[in-house]
Image (cartoon, rainbow, N blue to C red; front, side):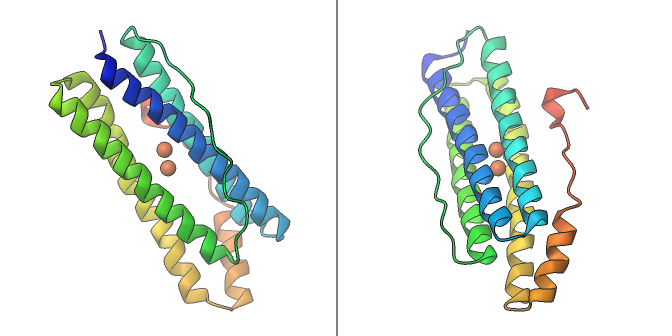
Length: 172
Ligand SMILES: [Fe+2]
Ligand SMILES: [Fe+2]
């Protein structure tokens, strides 16, 4: 049986992952409104990935015989000055999520909850990938600056992103 404190913390993470999904859909809408459909596509896939993260946590909590609970989701920010500002906000958000995952891991270790620790290891590495991928887009946007052609090339590049089912869901 899952420790009560651990269960509550994992449930909070379900809400946090749904907030990420919600935030990225909102950012996708900002890009669509600017005619940058490749960036918007990237955001929608990112939102889908975050929803998949909630499913991984849900499955795990249920498997451990505990109830999964959904908390309230706050309204995401929807005004930005530039694509760079959006992606800087994504990077900052992902760094916050990394902190949340690390706190969950610290709790699992404190409680000697080895199963939760093993499940969270996937999330730890996923955050490394997330920060690296988003950081790459931030760097490109900084190089692009005010070059509209560069922005359109990156938009086209981001439009090719495909959805990969996260391995813990095991239905590739
Ligand atoms: Fe996530
Ligand atoms: Fe994420």
